[in-house]
Image: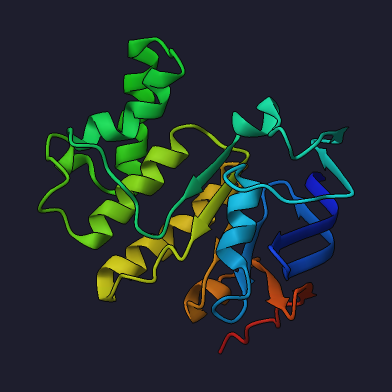
Length: 224
């Protein structure tokens, strides 16, 4: 089923047309990689979907209901989460960082604590629960940012270069978390150049090129 569909999506900076996308359709519980050259507009597109930048659109539907992108619809604001490639953590404990969104939404403390515990276990950061952000590795910060997003149970999770600053085991740990997001019912769009993210089973590929969006079929992986 379709989660979000946008037709005639245009973004301009002054006289420069960044992209003119005829149609963008994201399905429920599906993972996508968004590729393209640097400057093609990948991050901008994610920010538009998250309501952080404005753009023109001929039509838009969310969960089958017509909506306008501006002003950004409350239904989308409450269920679409964006994670920056350089996540900013608050100057408080890891546990409170992850639970920040739930507290802001007014969730009862006991319910929020249960969700936070589950998110920390999912991201493998339970042992860091009382640590402050300074001194944490890049991989730890990225997993904490993912847990802070997942705890909100988003319908759509937008990840901007989630592995770009990670190496080795840290990168592999983040990649390993992605399939469980779609298994839990979230759709995920990842702007990236990471070959291993692109090659994840079941991931659909979208490519921004010359201002247009192309859908590309993933080739089946051979198992020896």
